[in-house]
Image 1 (spheres, rainbow, N blue to C red):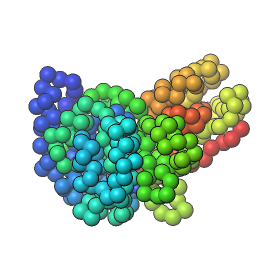
Image 2 (image 1 turned 45 degrees about the horizontal axis):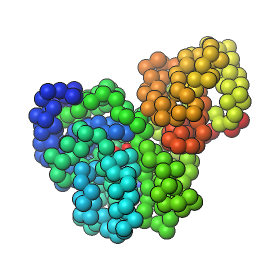
Image 3 (image 1 turned 90 degrees about the vertical axis):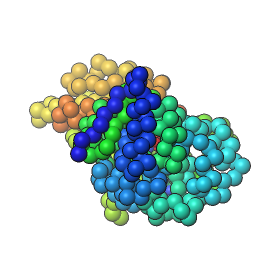
Image 4 (image 1 turned 180 degrees about the vertical axis):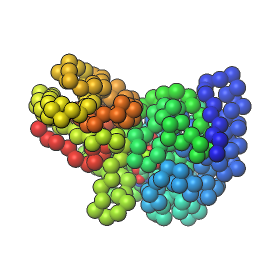
Length: 346
Ligand code: TXA
Ligand code: MG
């Protein structure tokens, strides 16, 4: 099929957004920017369109989707048990990169929830996303707009690379801001639990709930594995990837050793590392995650670089892991998943 691609901003932006909303209202698929990563949307009112999302992405059927809304009050039509605390959370963090998991109303289609009794909802903080959602009116189910298993798309061209020819429209508004996906917070248990660290940091949530009042770890796998016991590589580059956790010195030493071995075998290597490591990996392609103490930069760059490794056609990828602080926790989580759920501690 032919995919319509609109580049934004454009003087005709309102017209383009109305066209996109019309496609969604009629049961088509539109990829759109959010402040985290690009999403691939289908209207909540069209379960068959939602099923098409799974086909197009090659996504396992048991992995539920997030509903995107433009107005906070829409939440009460989707979820039950919305406590005062949940409303306060939405006041504090919406629109923004926080997804809330709540008990689902009966009429939420199983295509969205993968048959779970809960539903995930968020209000994105991006003018294009918000205007599109306002025009559609019904909530829009949207996973990240990548092929399943590939790094999430942080630019319109990433989406074109993965989905052109298989969706109805792509709204290309350049770079998404945060660069990693929203924080998924499960509000259905006794204690709020972070199922996926993301744009709203654990420190921010502790500021809201009180320290120690939420459960969170970087080592969480929100997406359920396709088969029991099977770990799937998520966000992964094509080349085998290893990631290292330790002091900057020990990490560098281990990566340098690995590079030396690769060179002896004639392999091409890429390293994702922090600026303070810059020149030490002189035998490899160095992809800078920025300043170690400003993990926001790493968040913005990490998915793009994982894609870049494929474009460069390297044989091995090594990654320095950031500390599990601030948005660094989300970066750590994504690199750990990209490396197949293994970390080399040194
Ligand atoms: O930033 C984001 O959240 C982006 C943009 C497009 O909004 N979306 C996104 O969607 O990352 P996706 O489908 O790639 O990730 C959704 C995550 C998955 O890990 C899924 O398992 C989890 O949310 N999820 C969805 N519904 C859930 C539920 N009812 N209970 C637990 N986890 C849920
Ligand atoms: Mg995803």
